[in-house]
Image 1 (cartoon, one colour):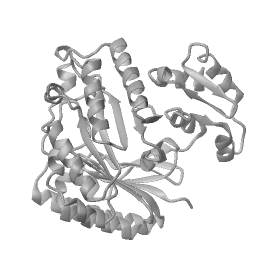
Image 2: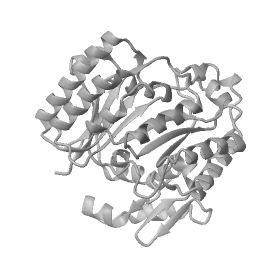
Image 3: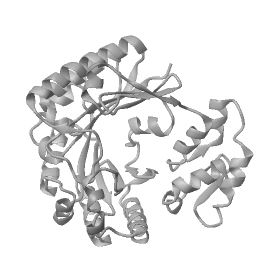
Image 4: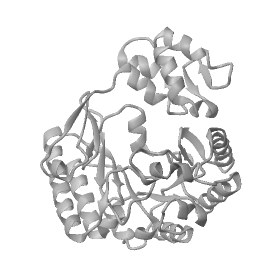
Length: 366
């Protein structure tokens, strides 16, 4: 069987960003110790039950770097032992300010080989609007520490569509990422999530309208391409052979196991998750989320990628030809420059990505 991806949720932050709806709580040393104990136990128990190897490990959050070097080493060692990880991509998310306190040479010895830094913007005014507590200089110093430790796979997060963001300010952030020689950039359109502070303040945020947001997105795509970053997914760009192996598992409908509150999984044709609750996590409770890996789901996820749907891969997976009705539906968008039909498949253009949810629904359901 193919190796799975392993996602570990670290649900701690020093404060809640106003746009964030991820499951997280205030960090305390006592709770972090308890959570680390429980997480390691869950990793070992899941490995005994599933008996699978893993070739990617992703520590997300929250702010995993808040756990500190010793707890992180314990988690890395537990996962590596339980899932026989060889030549694995091991990623940890961090905020620039908390990353400054980590011992990266030690973390590298225990398997860490990729770091995702939550930069969001290199413009001070935009960081303030986002409620971020770090500076661009913090990100630069953290990246320098990571490089000195011998880790040469750094991803930076950018946010597009921030209040009062301009093409010039976005370009400043892009140039900053290029100056740090980041191998990978994840650039997300700001989305107002229900229940967040931003939702309550939506009318006063002065966010870009849809046309302006589209203009910023397309400008970003062109700028990153000119700097040598190849777009491989709606929101992700990388230098050659530096794509996120872990995230590609999601988009290629491959199997992964998520451990921690609010963590989702896809194993043995089933999707399930742990509720957004510490008590449910500590008690080992999960909820089923339906079957996974259906042809329709496979197409929906594949269309997020620049490679799009590849007919041969579809045929090998499902033992049937790619449905002609989907091709007919898709061809409606080729003349308008939203989609490209190839001999071996079809994929959205950059302009098509901006309407991907609507277009995908029309391809699948007419």
